[in-house]
Length: 230
Image 1 (spheres, one colour):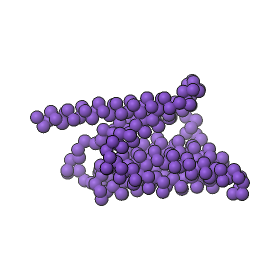
Image 2 (image 1 turned 60 degrees about the vertical axis):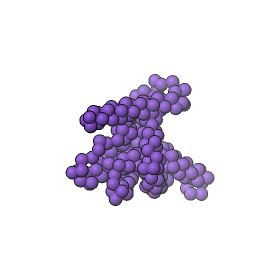
Image 3 (image 1 turned 180 degrees about the vertical axis):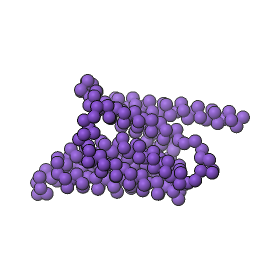
Image 4 (image 1 turned 90 degrees about the vertical axis):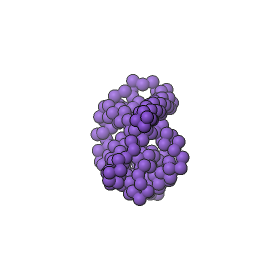
């Protein structure tokens, strides 16, 4: 497939669309993890988080075929993403003033790295499928995701600071993605009715589970903090 082939143009458009859709997921994770950072550290967190996401995508691109063949990988990743989504919705405990800002920054980057390790796999697989074995298209898809993640994370961070309810929407989105990852695992995909794959039912259930768990934990934390003040 060369650049004069009509299928090449179609593949380019497909890759751009995939990156627009899936890079948003990574941007949500970065924004959620960086929202509590001091203003002077927030940009560094976004840039480091975006760099982490890109490096992970490149690493997955090198071994994507073998990773997809491992049973239960998506299940484990989906459960891990659920845990991350709940943690991000509940938020961190109030920081000790003696803790250095750099520690907070690297904690945010660590959270981003774990979540992106789970989510970047889907992006790499989708871009690889759209590229149809064309190495230049595959590289184009990975490179295109860099500005999309950085700009998307900056925009979403601004929204999170102004509208806290977006935090809960972001956590629900991560839960939705986790549910879809779990049912797509090779170990169980063939045992699930095709109709279930075609509907967002599992993703919605997991999203509700994430929000409900986070609400319970938030109320429990508020009650404990209230008891301490009394």
